[in-house]
Image (cartoon, rainbow, N blue to C red; front, side):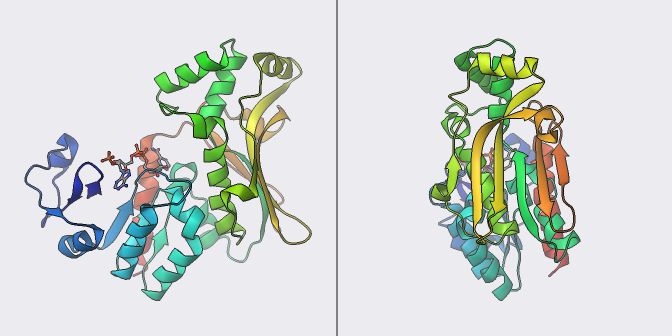
Length: 295
Ligand SMILES: NC(=O)c1ccc[n+]([C@@H]2O[C@H](COP(=O)([O-])OP(=O)(O)OC[C@H]3O[C@@H](n4cnc5c(N)ncnc54)[C@H](OP(=O)(O)O)[C@@H]3O)[C@@H](O)[C@H]2O)c1
């Protein structure tokens, strides 16, 4: 295992659960880099869960590349490599007879990528709409309940939902990265951050939120992508006022929802209620089992 602070730690016989839980790595030898770590650890799979770098996808892409080149499966919860290098990493994995899988990158391990890859062969995804960012959902709800924007952000931080710097969530960057990961994989396109028309929630006022509620509607930060007539995929992230009969309007708190339009199913909706960390961990485990069963 490795991290910025700890370096690339190795353990010939694996790390005991007790030592992992106690974060006790005092006697573990440290490899110089990911290449040496892959050799010394004799890894069968690499789990890449470093922080997202939305601009470059690094160093996660380099870690995954190193693993695949060494004949090691690469499993990731990081959206960066999916957004920036999905096609290259998938082709590299195939050339090495290994897998690059990333179910936990969007909606915490809910089976979305595997649903289309394994269960719905040959289906055409024409577009999708979703509410995929918890922080903005929680902040809008706090404001609806009477808090100011700043108070609501602080509450989301105290609940552990928002980062200490919530800018990427508030301005729709995190949501845009999710749209790109979904569109690039499920709609075979190559969107970059600048291709997504993006508007965050900063401009929404408490008055607008209360007015919408009293009209039987709700504001949500909506992610969407659709294939235009010329074949291009048009993607956006923007606050929208939705009727409460719209399934996207019903998600509360840290829950999320996505509605796919396909050639077979006009509307296929997946909702995730109150995810915990175990949901993300499950997605990584499911990918690992898929990878080792296919090798
Ligand atoms: N948390 C979730 O429920 C969830 C759900 C879906 C997807 N994800 C994705 O999963 C990944 C991990 O999430 P998280 O919440 O654990 O993120 P996090 O709190 O940012 O932790 C990331 C870890 O990555 C390490 N790291 C950062 N930069 C590194 C670098 N340059 N080289 C080596 N290690 C580095 C950090 O090590 P140090 O501590 O040593 O700096 C830290 O241990 C992210 O990409 C996130 O978007 C998370």
